[in-house]
Length: 223
Image (cartoon, rainbow, N blue to C red; front, top):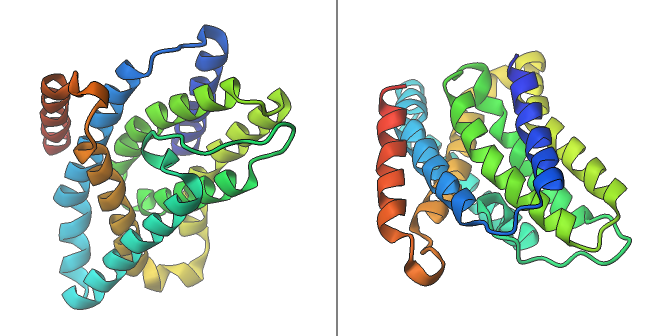
């Protein structure tokens, strides 16, 4: 069920964009703000307390910083697609390998903690849907071949379930679960804070965005 939900979140988002061809992204940005608050709050409420309970705090802080730096490095290639910004250019007829690899590595890491933190599945789903919609709008509106767009979204949909599968079935990863979770915490902290602190275009959604953020925190608290 976990794998199915993660895959459907991306594929249904792509199908929605192909069918409806939405032009305005404002509503999706509000959903993105909710997802950023939800993801950040769940990280603070569940992931951080657990990893600091089971290991050396300074060592874990190092892995969290590595996760933050890793995500900054990935965004050098993805141009911020992980938090809803598409500033990259796709050349006509070419598969966007750089964008795909950077987004896929991010998605793969997202799946690692789900094995032991099932509530995190909801945060990733809420985060992934608006990202998938905005990414789909970009791909559909670009000069990329439609087949490449389908392949891109299909493979991207498989990355987070693959991360979960690997963390469940590769025994040699088990001794490093806490460190890997700390790494993912760093990724989540960077992504969620960027989403929350970036201003809305034209500053026209500030109050609504604030209310959505508060709602995301409350939802995570009572999950």
